[in-house]
Image 1: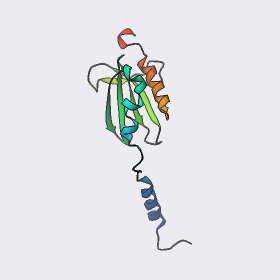
Image 2: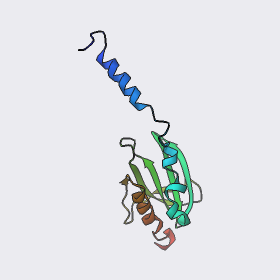
Image 3: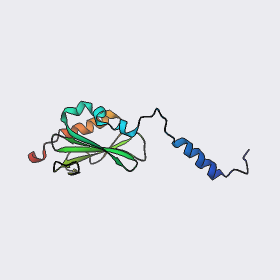
Image 4: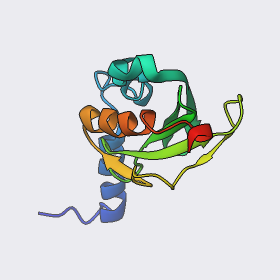
Amino acid sequence: MLNPCLNPDTLAAEKAAQLVVPSPLAPQLEDRLDPSRLLAPLSPLIASWDLRPCPGGCQVIIRFQNGYGAIISEDRRLAGTYEIAPLRFHGQGTEDYEFYFRSHVPDLTWCSESDEIIQVCAQIARLLPPDKV
């Protein structure tokens, strides 16, 4: 039986707030996106990487030795799903890149498994260097 003294909107908001509390055992977003762990099979091809905050979490920007890279971020709408886009670096700085949409690598890929992320990043790491294209 419903209690007439309770506002259903308030009750629903309180229940939703309880569901948002993260478990202390749940891995932090930074841990899930750690390139040294996630992309260990590609480590010989990685020149550098940068972990930075973004709306809704954080993102990783990876620079491969061939002058290309990848930006990986968790999809804010679907937890456990990652967005990957290819990049082309045009300088030595961490901000010296642009999205690169002129290769066989998809412009934007959604992945939920680390093997899928590794596969997409491996495709980017195998692109011919920009000066050879």
